[in-house]
Image (cartoon, rainbow, N blue to C red; front, side):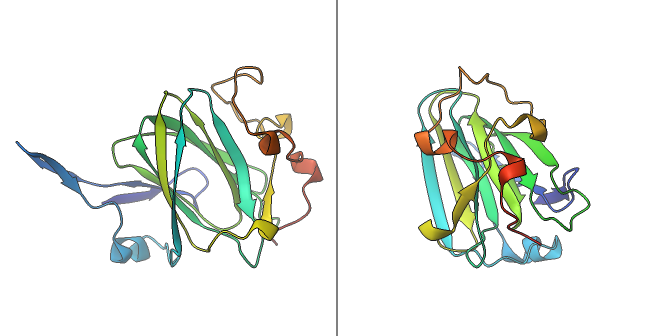
Length: 183
């Protein structure tokens, strides 16, 4: 398993090794020891799965506020996405910056630590995502940032009119209007 930091070093890309034969293939997608060696110490508490039928579906940018803040380990089971993480840690030298990476359905995962807003856009139809989170869902802790806020400078693969979003995601605040969440 190869785990390496992206240009925001706390966000990591995880690439497992596949072992195949005439029957198909096998791969480890999570091994605690490998994650610990890479500095990922989260204890994952819940697994989630989502399905998006249409290409251009945007989910995010979501987060949970403390004390229910979540680290996420996101993997595509079918399809392909552009995955985005935005640093919301006010004391971080990368505060307000983002990382965007294409994730195919080859077992690659992205680790998004506590302190980041997270979202993705589907690049194909019929996309299924599986992700682990380090705390259970708490509706009272939900928050987010508007996906297409120009201040973030995210280059999404869809325009405002092409994107399929929930009504709730369309109402998220701009980055400048987000209350400080993480020190």
